[in-house]
Length: 181
Image 1: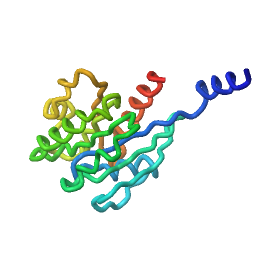
Image 2: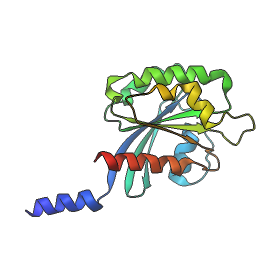
Image 3: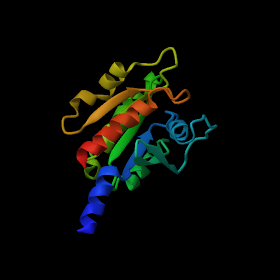
Image 4: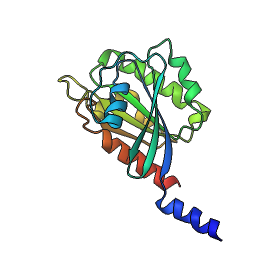
């Protein structure tokens, strides 16, 4: 009986955990986003060859965020991080019109993986502070997000350096997590 109450109490008030995989092409801003969320400040980054992992606390949810390098030679390694992933953050450089089709191909390839079939998708349309950045509607179109029928997804305009939009994205993820439990 006591165990029942303690598990009920934990479900109502306890901290929830969510495993997040953050991927995207190289130089999209993944590491800058991770450390802006974790530390609240901009850090100097270099291209991520392996991965960074940090726990980000938000609204009684502990997000374990895996930031995996996006250079083309290491993208095949992304699949090693798929297991138990509940949410995907796909970061797009909204100013990089030349590679948005490449981003679409990588996103589609990843979403076809069986291990990610239940993961929700949050797209960060990053670098919105740049003058020629594509807006969220244009990114939605270029990535083909409307064709995703069997997956919950959301796109959020962001600027990693200022933090604009990042917490709105976490809010969506936390709402999705709570509705699934």
